[in-house]
Length: 289
Image (cartoon, rainbow, N blue to C red; front, side, top):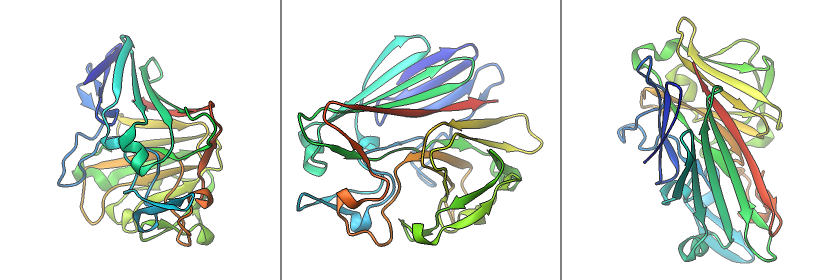
C-alpha cells in the first residue's frame, strides 16, 4: 500500500490494480471511499483498462483472431509497480507483458498518478503506445465507490453542473443501446434510490464537455465532488437489487459494446486510437468536503 498525505487528508492506494482504497479526513475522522465488502462488490475504485464495460459475448476480434476478455478488462487484477516521488504523490505503472499480449495483442505502458493538494485527490492517466508501428486501440475508465450511510441512502442526491438536460444512454442487459438515447432532466439534483439502478448504471453522454458531479445529502456537510474535464461519458451506479452502502461516480473514456456490435475491435464504439510512440493522457479530480 502507498499512502500519500496533504494537510489532514490521507489517500491510500493498493499496488494491486492501482486502486484507491481510502480517502480519509484525519481531522474529522471521515472516510469517503467505499471500504469493500464482497457481499455487495469486492472492488473499491478499480481502473477499467483496456475495456470499459462488457464486450459482446465477452469476446472481440482483431485482425481476424478472436480474443476473450471479461468485463472491464484486466488492469484491476494486475500488480502495478509503485513509486512515491513526494509525500503527496504516488505513481503506478503497468507495462504489457507476455500474459497481457495473449488476451490483448498491443504493447502499452499505463501510468496512473495520484496527488493530493488543496483541491483534493487528482487522478491522472497516461497511456503510451510502446509499439514500433501498430496503432493502439483501448478504452479506459474510473470506477470509484463512495461511502453512503445505508439508512440515509434515499436522502442522497447527485447534482450535475452545468444544470441542464443531458442525453442518457440506456443499457439493454450489459450492452449500450445508444440508438435509443433518452433525455434526462438534471436542472435539479438527481434524487437517489436503490430502484434508480434497476437497469444498471445511469450513463450520461457528456460530449467531452467539463462537468462536476456532487454526491451529498441535501442536509449534510459531507460529500464529494467529481470534476471531469474531458470525458465522453460518466456512469452513476450502485448494485441492484442488493442494497449497498455506496454509490459510484465513474468517468469513462470508453463504453460497453453496443447492442448491435459485430465484435470487431476496430468498429467498437468510442474506442481510442493511439499512434505508435504517442501518449494519451486524461484524468479527473475528487474533491471531498
